[in-house]
Length: 392
View 1: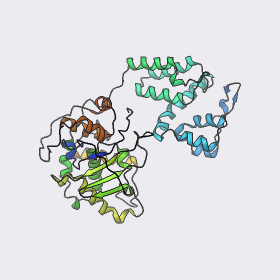
View 2: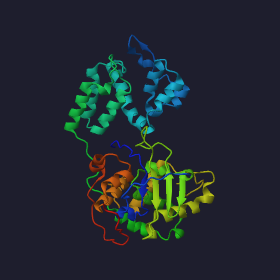
View 3: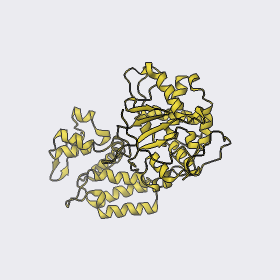
View 4: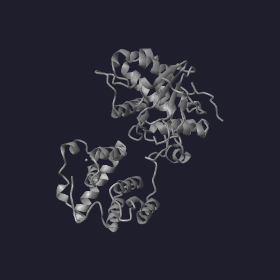
């Protein structure tokens, strides 16, 4: 996935998924809202590979997503355990999972070559990356491998592996030979899903399962956000006002950076068609789950006992089920495609680019243009509920 910087501003979203099917889906303007409410040893610079599996109980339980070798490196340098934990936490869980595959392969490669995986000859490190390229890995995966090795390898002059001129040149050559390609060349039409959601009305007559899936899809389409963001929505960080609901996001998002605040999610009522109004659907969901959630404060909970917070995998499954029922080819389009579908629809309806970037949390128009802005597969035959939003 591309790296996306947080726009650092509040997200104003008109509560109409018709939002996405309409120019108003992505708010034409950004609103400023104040929310109340991992020991190993080395001998003469060579790693003793027989100790790599000698992991303490703590280390075995906390291998940091496969980055135990990095933990080992820090501990061998005499860094206190508490400090090591904090240093390890500087990498996000997702990043640690991505790095783990390449670090394990690197250590195995060094074991076969009988070289120190912390201070290898540059030419062998370059060979390792070249082997990955020859295997057919994408440029994105190769760049991740470079970053993973850079977390371990430093040269005598202090240069990190990833910053070495020859490594940079190697990756550039890989880019030119195998440039990154977006997952999709076209995207599904939001109107198709909106039409299906309109049939799930009134919300008061829906089962909790139907209501849960409908709300989740509306939240994704209206906000243009990742599932990660929706998964973090919390009732303790929610403020309900007249015809709108405001959520602050207190957890770390993929685009979170030091010095930049997370966006506010503002969901507004879509009075033109209550059948696809995320605000009305949200209020019904909160009321319906009030006596089920007990001490659970995250918004989305399981519709079966014990009604605890759903996992990210469950959220993904909910979206996939809804897409399939709406007629979307889920063998081709994954749940994350809601982000491209909603923002592409907004652009098609002439929503200004600044509004799209602010709502979706992108600071670079290039990210949207390269990875998310796609031609829509087909025009919908459904015209009701289409708004005439601000097209400036």
